[in-house]
Structure formats: C-alpha cells, structure tokens
Image 1 (cartoon, rainbow, N blue to C red):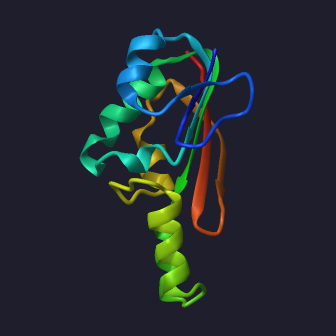
Image 2: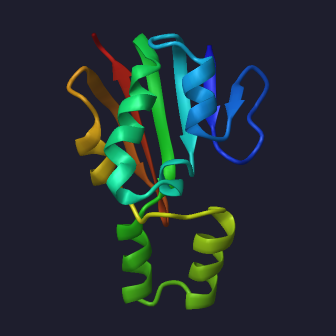
Length: 138
C-alpha cells in the first residue's frame, strides 16, 4: 500500500489521508510500502512532532520508504535575512500554500526524530523546502 498524506490530490495508486486519526484506523502497522508526507508535518504543533513521526514510521514495512516534503524554516529565514525574496511572496507561500501551518520545522528536526531502524537515502533542499527520504532497514 502506498500512503499519501497532504491536502492536494495524489497521483493514481496512492491511498490519500488528510489526518492522523484516519491513517491510524485504516493502515495497519508495517503495512505501507511507501509513505509520502507533503506539507503534512507542519500542520502539527512542534511539541507533537515526535509522536506524529513515530506514528508515521510505524506504518512503514521493512524495506519500505517514507518521504517528507515540507517548508524548511531555515531556508525561509535565510531568504528573508538576505532579502532574496520580497516579504509578501514569503508570506504568501508560507500561509497560503501550506494551508494550516501550526509549526515551523526544518530538515534537521525531522532527521533527528527518525528512529534508528530507518536509513536516510535522500536529503535535499529547495529554495524554501526540504525533502527527506528514508528506508526502513529492520
């Protein structure tokens, strides 16, 4: 099973969930071959992120992958500090595009929250986002 968590519609073949309670009810532990979280973690408070990530990774089977794509606050702050983007564009992206932002996170926060049975396979930065992909190794 391929699981997509986010507000936009996924490609065909992905099971779409927009919240954790539905995911917890409908996806068994270690059932998913892939979990893709698009602007999903930032919908939760910073204090809840460890619990959210724990639930998400529990759904991934051995050899399965989890991918996070979200706004990276470090990248946004850099753009503001260096005046690389007008503040109105930054605000538009943060508060319109992410729909319900409840925390400011970065790649490092997610990386350090992953359990030791996940091996990071990809870490990338966009202009104001990050992508982290990890595979469950045991």
